Every structure is written in C-alpha cells, then in structure tokens.
Image (cartoon, rainbow, N blue to C red; front, side, top):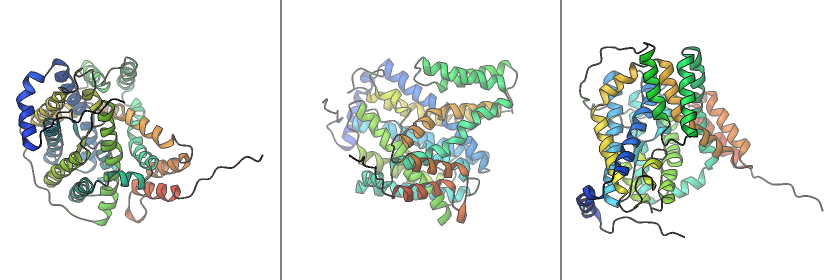
Length: 411
C-alpha cells in the first residue's frame, strides 16, 4: 500500500513562510490551470444557488453582494492558508448543501435568524475539531439518511431544469445536450461549457437583459443575529450534518485517494474559526471542497504531489480575486433569462443529486428508510413550524433504529 504524503515537516508559520518561499519555482502550468478552473466552476455554479436563495429571502442588493463576496473571499483564504501550511492542495469552498437548504428556508426565516444559525454551526465545528468527534457523529446518524435528506433538498433544482423548457425550449435543450456531451467527453468541469454556451445563445437570440450595471465595491455589513429555536433546528442542525457528510468527509476522502494524509482536525478548526469570525457579515461558512477539489488534487494538475500544493494556493488567489469583482459578476448573471439561470443551477447540481441518490439507496437494509427520508424532505411539510429537512432526518433516524433481520432459509 502506498504511504500517504503528510506534507511539510515544519510547524506553524514557519511552514507557511517556507512553502511561500518555494512557491514561485514549484508552480507549473498544470497547477495554474487547475486552480483557475476550480474558481471558474465555483463562479458559474454555486453563485446561481446563492442568487436564488437571496431572492427568496428578500435580500437587498447590498446583502446579496456581501454574502457572495464573503463566501468567495474566505474560501480563498482557507485554501491559500492550509495549502501553504501543509504543502498539499487544500481547496476551500462554501457548503453547497447549506446554500441549497437556504433556498427554501429563507422563505420562512429572516437573514438575522440565518446569521444566528451560521454562528451556531461555526461554534459546533470548532467543538468537533477540538474533540475529534467527527467520526462519532457520522456513526450515530446513518449516512444514507443524511444523503437522502440532501437529495430531497437538491431535488427541486433537478426538476427546474425541465420545467424551464416551457419558457425557453431551445436554450434549455441545447444547454442540456452540451452538459451531457461534455460528460461523455470527460470534461473536468462540464458546467463551464454549459455556462459559456448559455451566454452565447442568450446574446445571439437577443435575450440579454442589460439593466445598466455599474462597477462598485462591496462593503461588508454587520448583520445582528437573532437566535431562535426554530432556526437552530431548521437551519443549523441540517447544515452541520450536511456539511460533515457532503463536504468534510468526502473532501478528506478525495485527498486520501490522491495519496495525501489530510489534516482533519486542523482543517475543521480553521474552517470553524474563519466561519465564526465572518458569520456576522453573512458568511454561511467555509470548509473543504469536494467536487471541485478533484480538479486540483490529481496527477493531471501536477505529476509531483509534493509541489501540487501550488494548485491550492493559486485557487485561493483566484477565489479572492473573484471576490473583488463580485458586483459585476452578479450583474452578468442577472442579465440572463431565468430559464438559463435555473438550467445552469440544475446542471451544476445534477452530479451531486445523482451521487446523493445513489449513496442513499445503495444499501438494501436502509433503502426504504432512505426513500421515506427523501419523500418527507421533498414534501415541504412543516409541523410545529419546523422544516421538512429536519423531519426527514428525524424520521430517517427513528426508522433506522428498527432492527433489520433477514429470514433464514429452512433446511
């Protein structure tokens, strides 16, 4: 068995400065392209989810731009710092599952309640990082239940791809074909050509809705938290579990598959502290990336795994640079027809939805439990004012507690 690479042998800031010194000569064209591609995917995919959630939550333009800016900037800083600290490609990102959850939850909870939930989530991750309780939590709640809940939350985005046909049939149809063609061609980031084709077709058909966009800078705004039991249960609890199951756990698995020994506790603590400091400014939280991490951690980025950390550093630099241009990027997306936006979001999340469904029903014993969790989450029920993702988790955990026995064949 190949020994996992543990990164730099130095500790603390000494490691950061040492790797920063060697960064220029260690950088290659492969890591440069990989780092840029990670951020390009992040800019063309999750931003659509954030814009949808912000619209449902009746955010002001300032609150929307502030949210996107802070998630991009902290994701960049997370990856930049950890990549230099451990000399391995650590890619940061906001939790996609958390942002998707907010699309529906912000219709019932204020931005102040959401910020309070972000603070609870950040403190929870600091505790998990200090105690090393991640594995225990993942054992306590069945993985298929968490993945079924996530699939239920993602479900509406998949459906919106095809409900958009009635509004823009040709646009949507071509974008879907481009996505599946790119998948067949094994393009590392199929949502990028979808985005480019969507823009090109929108311009060609004269459907670009120019609203007099102006370039201006984002000014971070403090948002007073409003702690309520309902938001803690509806938002914080699902966000913690979904982030553990869909970001940290698979993110560390991606690093191990690339022959790295991920710094689990340090990563969770770093993400927790960054998230806690920036939560009052609207940050949903920062953590390890999963989907986009595959772009930067493999041999296609750099054959030498000891210098591949530069992909993480460059990704961090590009992420923080994109944050500077948050406003014009938002303006670009707002010029696109709603059907194009819905299709980009749905196709960007389609692999995550497919993976969640697969992992939720892959085990025979928990298949029906996973389906019950999925259907409850999709249903949108809200008994006692608590959202359907929470009830899906509760039902899944209770049903999973029923012992499973197999019939013995009579001899």
